[in-house]
Amino acid sequence: PGKDETTSTATPILTREFFPQPPPLVKSSAKTPTSAIEKVDVIVALIYFCNAFAITLPVILTPMAAKTYQLSPSQLTSFCGAVASVGIMGGGFGKVVNGIVCQRLGGVRTASYYLLGAGLCSLLLSMST
Image (tube, rainbow, N blue to C red; front, side, top):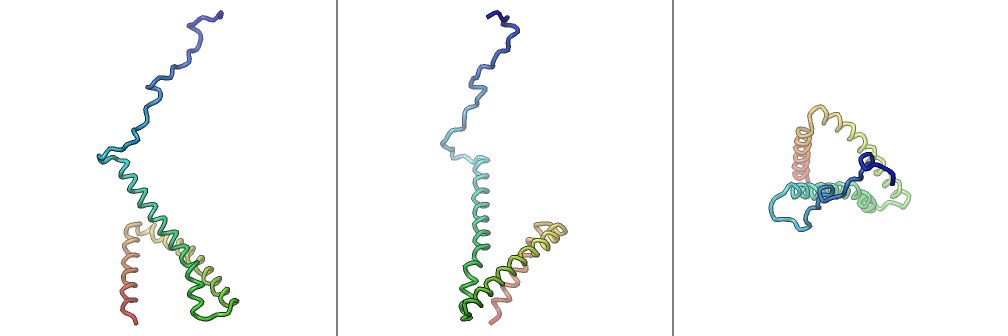
């Protein structure tokens, strides 16, 4: 009341163009970019699982390996603590060394060399008695 319609600010009308429709819930069988993203998600999840498994496996295996030496409970505790400490320090040192090596050689070449070295070590271990 009392205001001129030309000077008042009009609120925008919310239309379908303002809110786009969501994609359909049923996926088509055609290859879409999202199928490639979903494959990457599965691969990343599997890599994360393997990494977590490899990190937590020594927690379970170290006391079991120490029991084969028939140690007393105090010796068993000190052995497990020493192995855990050396593992943490070795992991930190390895990350520093690997960071320097990867920066100088590149990630692909470094991974290739590490895989070659792991394969040679596995071959040599299989030949030992």
